[in-house]
Every structure is written in structure tokens, then in C-alpha cells.
Length: 168
Image (cartoon, rainbow, N blue to C red; front, side, top):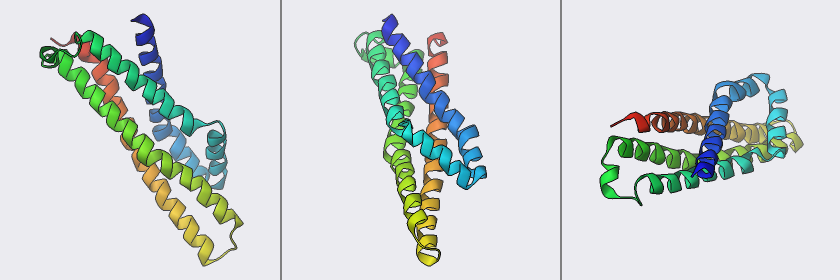
């Protein structure tokens, strides 16, 4: 139980903390830096940021599911009607939604941006290059919005996990 809690808490802190940091500080700073900011994003990709985060998130969710099973007496229905049960369930649901948005919206958009920017760098000046950059900008907005949603949902999950044991 201790190891399971450590995995859940450490991975959850890393996942939520990283996304909140990215949304609050990194992404606006990268955007403000213009072309130099793209180098920072490329360095993050080289360090496998977009591959590591889904693994950390999955470990958080899977360990949380097992913790939920244990604390609920094997998913006993009556426990889920209690204040702690409802609170932990809400936190679990928003975590899964955050994971889905991250994996199916944010990650693919961010990966595609890198490819488009490399394509734009190789393209000659003019309308074709401008069209590629415009597609990359649209994906950047999509990725940024998705990241804000993920960070917000994870903040909710953190709050629910922190208070659930004190309810009821």
C-alpha cells in the first residue's frame, strides 16, 4: 500500500505540476521568445517529454485505480455514495478526461507542429511557407488550449485527492 501510494502521489505531483508549470510559465515564455522559443520546444521533444508524460499520467491513473479499489473495499457500491467516495470518484474522472485530452489532442498537435516548422524552414519564402506556418499556428492554439484544459482538470483532481479523506 505504501509503494502504491508513493507511485500515485509522486507521479501525480509530477504530472499535475509539470502541466501547471507549462501552462502558467513555459508556454507563454516560449511564445514570447518567438523563433528562439521553438528551440526550447525542440529540446523538450529531444528529451522525450511527450513520451514520458503519458507514461507518468498512466502510472498515476493505474495506481490510483488500485488505491480506489482497496479503499472502497473492492469497489463496494455503498462506499461510492459516501462523501469521500464521491470526491475521489470525481477526481478520478477528471484525471481520466485530462489524460484523454493530453494523449489525443495536445500530444498529436504538438508533434505535428514540430514537423510543420521543419517543413516551413525548408520551404521558400512566400505563400506556400506562409500556409505551412498558418497551419502550425492553428495547431499551436489547439495544443495550448488543450494544455490549459488538462492543467485545470488536474488542479481539480489534486484538490479532490487532498480533501477526500477529510469529508464525512
